[in-house]
Length: 304
Image (cartoon, rainbow, N blue to C red; front, side):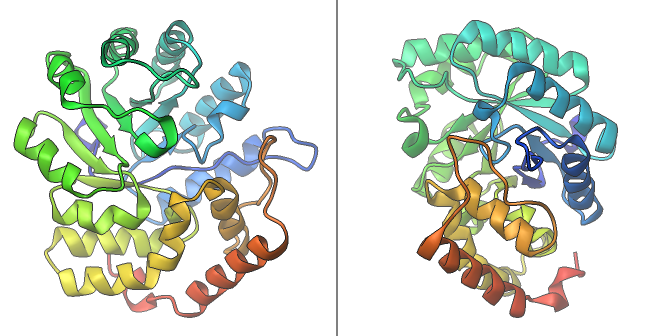
């Protein structure tokens, strides 16, 4: 699994719920297995789309165990580490390793906006809590802090800090990271509607939201980029872009799960404080997904 990390398409997989708001382990396993069957290269479990911060601690552990049971050994499994405090995050990292996760996606501590020194200390503590490779998640619009060069310079000496999920909306960041660090960190594109730009500029792979609804096209897009077929990559990307923009909105989880439901891949149920889309917004997203489904680039869906 280590040799397969940080390359290709990694859906930020959803957690499925029953009608009475319990975690639906069977449905979650079906979602994960279907994505792997459709050719994705890895899975991020318990990221934003996995509704990490809406789950109880024991539910998070159950989802990880279910993922290992369903697809462990087929593709790398990366667990999101998203906790209020550093002690909880470190404990979660140790548990994830014991359960059988292959790597971690480490977020800043939730709610509190840290100084660079505090951010570095948090990442060091979580990375040091297990032997798993860690991907740091940089998403300034969502978490109100940038993982700056000062922090990354200091963390470059930590062996298992291996990758960066780059979700800043400015594609110049990819070049700046690679110019400064070379291949010290793998850089994954993390914002769907800047994904092709990231791949062109040297990202090794794509952590994707909308792949959960359209995995074949996502795999074909990255395959085209990897073989240098930029005409084909642009063709798929342009078809995909109206949906990819949803990943940059605050209701991305609801939109992605609704898209999954329309495509027969999951349920739109979310856990509060989120509510399913309603009214004009729901109609808008349905129309977008149905348009994408009606115009799928099916000739490339199986080419990868």
